[in-house]
Image (cartoon, rainbow, N blue to C red; front, side, top):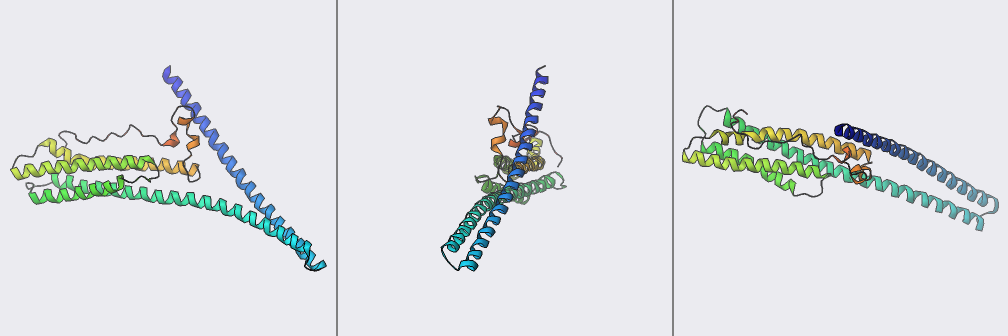
Length: 273
C-alpha cells in the first residue's frame, strides 16, 4: 500500500514537473515573440520619427521641430539598442559560461579514460604473463598509475565545474588510482623479497580497470542529464524548478547521485583482466 502511494505521489510530481516545463516553454516562446514585436514596433517608431524629421527639414528647413524629431528618433534607437545589447550579452555570457565548464568536464572524462587505459594495461600484463614478475615490470606499472593519479589530483581540486557530479566522479576515480598505486607498492615489496604473490593482492590490482570503465559509463549518464537540465534552463541549471526545494522530494533535473553503481575496489580472488 505504501509503495502504491509512493508511486502515485511520484507520478503526480512528474506530471506537475511536465506541466511546469510546458508552461515555461510557452512563456519562453511568448516572450521571444513579444520581444520580436517590441523590436519591430521600436523600429517602426524610429522610421516614423526619422521620416517626420526629414519632412520638417524639406518643408521648413532645419528648425526646432526638425531637431526635436531627430532627437526623438535618436532616443528611441538608443533605448532599443541598449535593450537588445543587454539581452544578447546576458545570453552570450550564459552560453560562454556553459561552454567553458562543459569543456572542463570533458577534460575530466579524458583523464578518467586515460586512467582506465593505464590500469587495463597493468591488469593485462600482470594476469596474462608467462614469466615471473620482475622489478622493472612493477616500476613501469607504478609509473603508469602514479601519472594518472597526479593528473586526476590536479582536476579534483577545481571548484568551477558545471555540476558537483563532476567533482564526485573525479574523486572516485582518484581514490581508485590511489588504491592501485598503494597495491603496486605492496607488489613491489613482494617481488623484491621473493615472496609468492597472493591472489587477494592480484585481485586488488586488477579490479580498478573494470571499476573505472563502469565509472565512465556513470559519468556519461550523469552528464547527459546535466546537459538536458541546462538545455531546459536556457544554459543555466533550472534550480527554481527542482522539487526538492519546493515539495521536499528530489527532482530528476537535479541529477541526484544514484546507488546503482558501487565499484568493488578490492574483490578477493579476482584473477581475470
